[in-house]
Length: 508
Image (cartoon, rainbow, N blue to C red; front, side, top):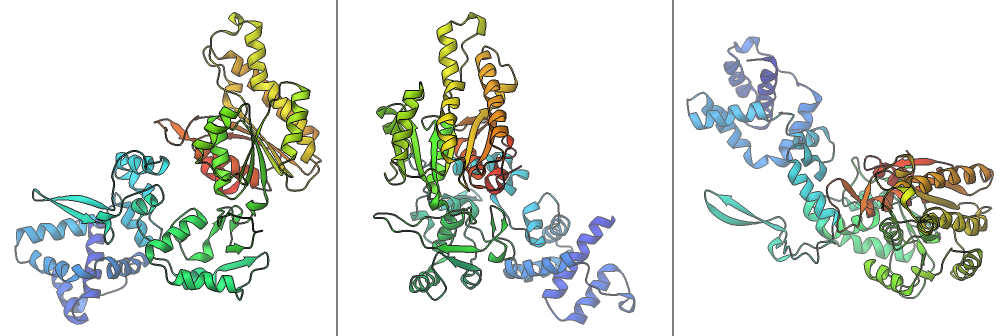
């Protein structure tokens, strides 16, 4: 028996000896197993991981302890099936392939993404469910599964009454990740209050009275809404992480407006309800992702469109948000006169705190020297001149105000020539230089001027294919840069591998 297998056997011995029978009789039995006289047999805790493992056994395997012990006894009586069962268990119980179990032993929270190392196809299917709207797909999923046992199909409910509960976009996170155990006392003890609230405020007391009445599903749903995850951080709510690191769960008072619903922000260190973000390019894939993410986090969004038809299409796509949350303005940036008129209409919406300029559609119509001057001027207007006019009109408007930002959305095509897409390289490359000039000229001002350069293929949240990323994920990354106060004068090269970091920290 090699050293690794011996260590595994030893750990299983420790489990059984610690959890069944009386101590001396077990040690005598273990000595017999090892072929040693009882006087030469010593017993010590094997390692800290063994203690953690014992705790997990208590929790997850309480009902099988006697079966394990029986299997172990039968191992020496020649019962072939039970012997094979025990041999397999003792060898495989610490197999590194079973990373989910090892994480649980080590105290690392298990996440649905951990399945990828075991079954990549299954993990991809789970991710697809999370990234896509499923209400209209007709999948007819419920919180139950079909199990095939010896040829007989049976229905297994994942939660009580699960076969009668349809899976929706609102509860699918619970299907994939399961229902966590949430300690409300710990949650309450690690909560802070601001904007006039404290622990003795009547509405706060009512809030906690209600939360204490919630079942596990309702608690997980509330936590998902408030923090973006239905899972409690490892170590409890004291380890909750926000945009700038550890932070407390915070309940704030916001100004009342009619028909306004409660809002949650996963960027706990920033009061997003005080942000009004001007977005150019709301008809595009990236722009719509940005708008949706900002709206979900209680921002007011002023979005510029070229036509009423574009407004209606965007609103339907975004789920027809309230007019006081999404303010639409129709206008153009074709001339200084157009820009001045647009500025006047935007200012009617109130004070702007941030600007996201996501202007320009992809172009790929052939070699540049085969294009007409009209085509040149059209692409130039779309990819470069509009950015210039937007910055010229609105950046000085907010440049001297604390907490403001202006984010240019560019692309990696500015640094690389793609077949038949030379105009993209030409004008996006020029846009990148424009950003560098503006950053240099405004570096002494309070405003933060950043370039967000997208280096991957972005698709709508309900149409993501292999090799591309969701515009919602990209929108979260852009929003992270917008709200994070330390990101200044940056040129961020963004791809699928670093979007999540930008979404949580706003920097790379």
